[in-house]
Image 1 (tube, rainbow, N blue to C red):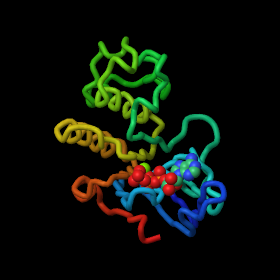
Image 2 (tube, rainbow, N blue to C red):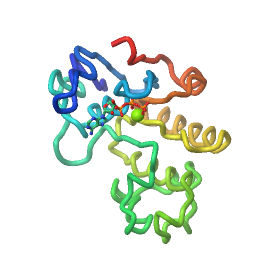
Image 3 (cartoon, helix red, strand yellow):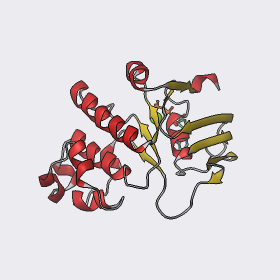
Image 4 (cartoon, rainbow, N blue to C red):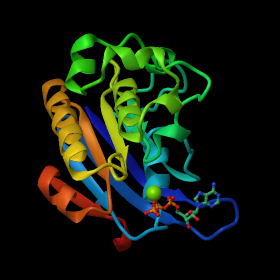
Length: 200
Ligand SMILES: Nc1ncnc2c1ncn2[C@@H]1O[C@H](COP(=O)(O)OP(=O)(O)OP(=O)(O)O)[C@@H](O)[C@H]1O
Ligand SMILES: [Mg+2]
């Protein structure tokens, strides 16, 4: 499968264009990095590719078809701040099941403990809650994962553990991955190629 953004142009309201004529493509099984200075629109581009924002110009397609407007979205996004991505009043179990029933292999690969499921989001650490968000984004029908500073707030060891699990899962399922990060070392280590937004 191929996720493609063609001639993408985006601006917030009447602000100047963040980018125009931007082309980006990610194939199944590929790990692509996206870097660029703060404020250049990396998060925005991730949101456009995941269908959270509509570009004013150009289009996003999967194998030539427009992104689906309803049903399970094949492009899933994981944000930097997990606490902003979950309903604070829901139990973890319910948060997880938003993406469908998670399989237990996935939970153990991500080091998610059964006892966390009964708790509320504020009763988990940031890193624990981020694992929940990653598991939620990795439902069976996910084909592309956009990781926007996904492990930035974690210590180096947890960061390495989480990436190891996610890369293993991505490889096994031939997911396409877009890794948005300021961390050059991370991008060089895990990405086959990278795109730099400052060139646009
Ligand atoms: N909802 C919004 N309304 C108006 N402007 C916005 C909105 N969201 C972001 N922006 C602006 O758009 C620009 C791009 O933001 P974006 O978050 O995509 O950048 P980024 O490359 O992800 O930055 P960082 O590296 O700091 O995460 C910034 O100048 C930001 O202030
Ligand atoms: Mg950002």
